[in-house]
Image (cartoon, rainbow over the protein chains, first blue to last red):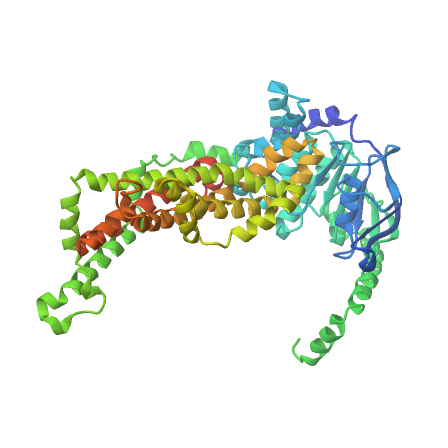
Amino acid sequence: MQQENSKGAAAASKDYAIGKSKVELRNVSKSYGEEWDEQTVIEDISFELTPGDLTVVVGPSGCGKSTLVNLIAGFERPDSGEILLDGKRVTGPGKDRMVVFQETALMPWQTTYENVVFGPKLRGDMRGKELKDEAERLLAKVGLYEFMHKYPLQLSGGMQRRAELARALINKPSILIMDEPFRGLDAMSRGLMQEFFLRLFEENHRTNLFVTSEIDEAIFLADRLVILSNRPAQVRKVIDIRLPRPRHYSMLNSQEAYDYKREAMSILHDEAMRSFSSTGVSSDFTENYTAQPNA
Amino acid sequence: MTDVAQSSSGAYALPRRRSKLEKLIQNVSFWRGVTAVIVFLCVWEVGSRMDEWLGEAWTVPFVGLIPPPTDVAVAWLEVLPKAGYWNSWYESFRRVLSGFLVAMALGIPFGLLLAVNKYFRDLFFPPFEILRPIPPLAWVPASLIFWPTNEMSIAFVTFLGAFFTIVINVLGGARSIDVRYLRAAQSMGASQWHLFSRIVLPATLPSIFTGAAVGMGITWEVVLAAEMISGGGTQGGGGLGFFIWNSYMGGSLTQIVVGMISIGIAGFLSSSAIRALGDWFMPWKRMF
């Protein structure tokens, strides 16, 4: 453990120069489908990922959070508006924006180590001993040094997410995009991963976008909270979370955190109810619910 | 992390590595399988000898008409030293393998091309889909006319049997790749070629081997049928299919069963070989 800490400290100073980029979204909109059956997923969204901050986007499920991630990562283009990375327009995917996907996107046919070195090896910008050392340093940092020759399916859910973090970090991204990364983990691993991720972030304050639908997770991690509306997604509110860093899980029990949570919850609740009542399902559901005396 | 490693390597001695044979002998499933085969043979033996022991009235339907396993074993021992019997094995295996290998060699790239290139798919998928439902045996008369020798007709029909299955599996596998793998690779700077060789190809391997396993089964069916149809002669003769047909013409029931079981064993060997190859090519699937 001692050794890992010292390695971590070295890493912090080494990575400090990178990861301080700024992302601006200006009036971004995105729709899918043919003209006669157009579904607007994102409508006129503008906000910023401020350098060195952890911006957390929360919103009701299915509101278009993943689409937002795809747009910033460059997998898809906005229909209108623009996304700027340090003032330059985003036109496609790039190694400056690494995405940690929902569930896991580690390639099952490669060992953990092979997954981590995948990017640098393809581009050939790091090789031989340098690459090996860097990969091993990152694997040690995420606590997977002993598991690097295992295949992803042999790892637990939490380990897979940490391997994916290492795979993203080795590419030295200027921003890290996390799309509901801890979804599907059990409550215990989820809590551990949140704390692990926080420590990683607080080491060097890399510009970070974190998407989630869990309000506690959002408040625990965020510098800024961007709350989205129902589909089509619009920015409902941006809240600065001024809880002190380094964060600790117990801070979630403070009055301050509670106030943030209540504010966020009331907005999200309104949005959730709106989506609920706009579908025919809702009335059936409420009727059934009230009809059951034991429910 | 480090604590775990220490306790597992230091405090406790690791169990001794067992050889493959040892593992097999200690495996309960293996003995269950052996028992099942023995019971099956016993039931067959008793069933087919009932009339011998208790009189005609006790003839068991179906089983009573089949020669008992002991008779089959005797007949087998008789043909085992004969070159003709082994030549049948050789002939059938040669046909299956050549048809199968050509089908793999053409089917895998064709399926991958269909999957990755939209123009290619638009052009070649419709005719492929019209030809695919035609059973391989329906091609026999046409190919007998078309190809100059019986042997070539057999090879062609065998090839068709495996080809369509392999293509459809490769296509399905390559088209259902999780888009996140491709996106992750794209973010990391993968070129089109990288995407194909590092993502599409390995992600399609499981489907390729599924296609190969199914295709191999079909190839055996087609070869056997083709050998029976082409019937003896010097041209395009021989093979296990002809061995059975010949035994039928000669009225030797025991020898028919010998031929059938031989095919069973041959098929089992072929699919074992494919499974072993699959394990070797896909080490990440081996842990389960």
